[in-house]
Length: 220
Image (tube, rainbow, N blue to C red):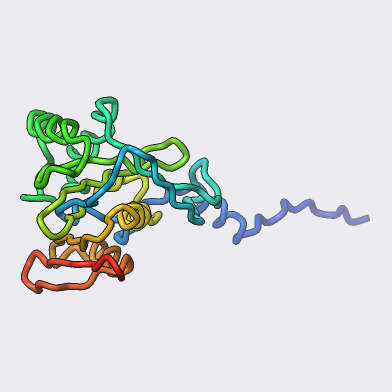
C-alpha cells in the first residue's frame, strides 16, 4: 500500500501581501503639506466656540475610523504652547512660512505672547490665534488679523493630521466669523497643496506675483 505523502498547505500569496501591507504605517501625502498661507484672519471672532460638522475619514492604521467629527475653533491658551511649538519647530510645517526655517524657542515665545495678549480683533494689525480642535484633540492653528478693509488668514496643521482636510474646515470656521469683510491670504507659488485648499474654499488669485495673493469676498 502506498502511503499518502503529507504536503504543507501553500500560503495564500494575496493574503500574505495584504498582511504585510496592512502593517505599514501610512504617511501623509504631499496634499497635506500645508504651511502658513501667510496671513491670518477673521474680522469678528469672539470667545464663543464655533462648530462645523463634516464627515472625515481618518487613516485606517490609527485608532480612528470613518466617523462624523466636529471641527471647532477656540482661543489659544497658554497651555497650547507645547502643541504650537511642536509645529513651529518642525521643518516640514515651516517650509512655506517666512524664510522657511523652524522658529527658535525664543522667537516662538515672543510671537505667542503677543498673540495671547490679543483677545479680540477690534484693534487692527494684531494677531489673534485660535486652535482647531476635533474630538478634544488639537489639530492646527488659525491665525487671525484684521486690516483696514479685509482680514488676513493663515494656518498651520499638525503633521499627524495632514491629508484630512483640517485646513479647509478651519477656513470654513473663519468664513462664518468674517462678517462683511473680505478675506485675504498669501501663499508661495510652489505651495500647491495650500493653493488647492484656498481655491476649494472660494479664494481667487488677485495678485499673480510670488507669493500669490488670494482673496475671497464676503458674499462668495
